[in-house]
Image (cartoon, rainbow, N blue to C red; front, side, top):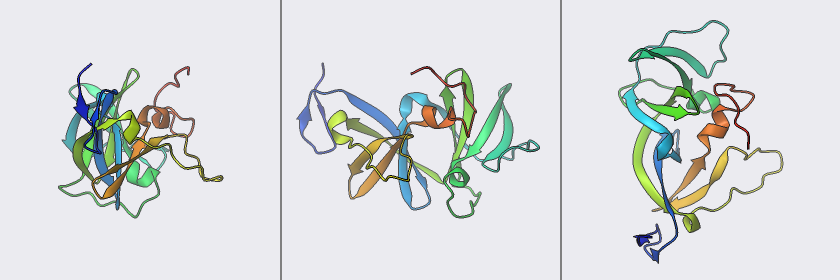
Length: 163
């Protein structure tokens, strides 16, 4: 096992995972880098009738029809603005390719398991899509289980996997 440095700059031999961090509003989120296929600028989408508001439509990505989900709308953030900084994270989830619209992409972050804290219990707030929280520099990073979120009943974009 190789020796790496955790976010706390201490030597560790525990497993390190890489996450792609991105901005949604004023918050920073991250997802497992292994789920990411590519990053693209936001292009016009073909709207699908009767789709939920957070599903912007579909695009043809090299012959594959890809649904585009705006995470800003899904998370009930302020009205989204589509500009040159808007990014689509193309994800491979299960056997599907899905695009997730975010405000910006920040960095690839390496986190040891000890850097990740469990999400707090909020009672009425459901944290089932959160892997945990990590402190990176001066800020907090919210780690999402994007596969669990996209396979949830309310999104139904990916077949639910047996756990």
